[in-house]
Amino acid sequence: MLEISPRKVAHVIFQAREGGMADHELHAFIDSMNVDEKASLVALAWVGRGAYEAENFAEALEIARAEATTPTADYLMGMPHLAENLEAGLEAMGIDVGDVESDFLR
Image (cartoon, rainbow, N blue to C red):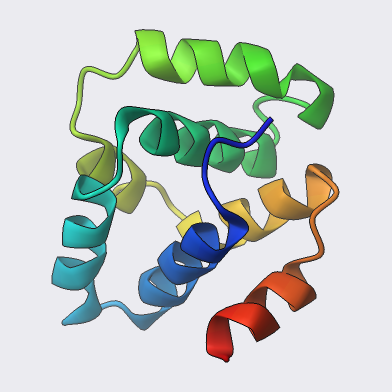
């Protein structure tokens, strides 16, 4: 189960797409998350890029917590295709990305 709101994930997706000045804001936004939210974000990105299946999310979450040696913002922002991985992760978890993005834009 996700321990981060889909709205926060949408926020990361939008800022990851922006690049440039938004990178500083994205770094600060991820840094402000609690440990559970950060681990969920990493696990979600792993599911989105195909390293784990959605049904193995709990395992991905456990590993994300155990292997968190690099600051999460640095790790995620260094990940190629972060926005796409997070979108694919949400979809794999059965969360409609279109609904999440529309809610975020309101």
